[in-house]
Image (cartoon, rainbow, N blue to C red; front, side):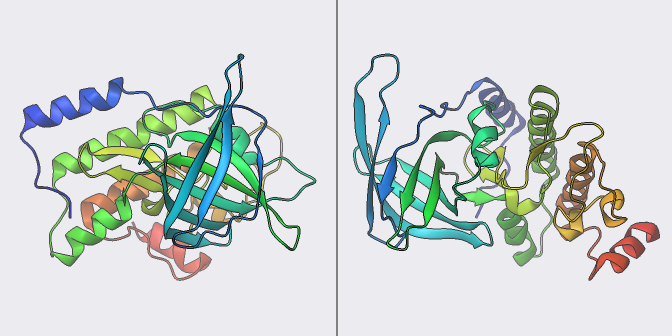
Amino acid sequence: PPPPPPPLQQLHEALLKILSCRPEMGDAKEAPVVVGNDPVTGHIISTTIGGKNGEPKQTISYMAERVVGTGSFGIVFQAKCLETGESVAIKKVLQDRRYKNRELQLMRSMDHPNVISLKHCFFSTTSRDELFLNLVMEYIPETVYRVLRHYSTMNQRMPLIYVKLYTYQIFRGLAYIHTVQGVSHRDIKPQNLLVDPLAHQVKLCDFGSAKVLVKGEANISYICSRYYRAPELIFGAMEYTTSIDIWSAGCVLAELLLGQPLFPGENAVDQLVEIIKV
């Protein structure tokens, strides 16, 4: 469970630390291929990194420790680097050989304290000749969703100072991906907001639905989780802007204050009814 709210001075110092830190950048563009790497507990994956600017390549081995997330996208598991003891998160997704992976392309260009950091990546194959992309990222143990659930279990509301601190960082991360990168996340929700419980640093994660939005270019409207879906998406708009993320973030802010979703619609029509009621 999160520690009790710190004094304002400590919170101020924590915020300054968050503003000044910079994550590690992902490395070489040519990702190595590993033969076979099923994410089971105790399984060891070895890959190579480096080799750019005349530097020698180095082998890094990861031991899969536990699965931390699954979905239609694939699987995310926590692993430990055997050489350094560092914990990382590895997202493993099935890769279509005909296309480049959009999430990888976007993450390689991002460098911000409030956006999850890509360390490096590698491809792996299976006995059935399936190709998987493995994104190796910094490991952050909590999510805004789990923190909210903790307070709900205790029949408490999240302290307002945390609401302010988390909200500021969410919008700061969005400002970066929107203005600097031109990217819309398209799936902002508490589960996709990581929290370091000690530093109270928040990071946007899961760019599997993210896209660079081009004016005049159609996009799919069935995007974003229902409770956090902007009205234009519910109405089926195929041309929209990064403002859909702002709507989602506003819904998250309300949830931080209320302790429950603001618009808990059971379907698209019910979702609109919930919005109109407000």
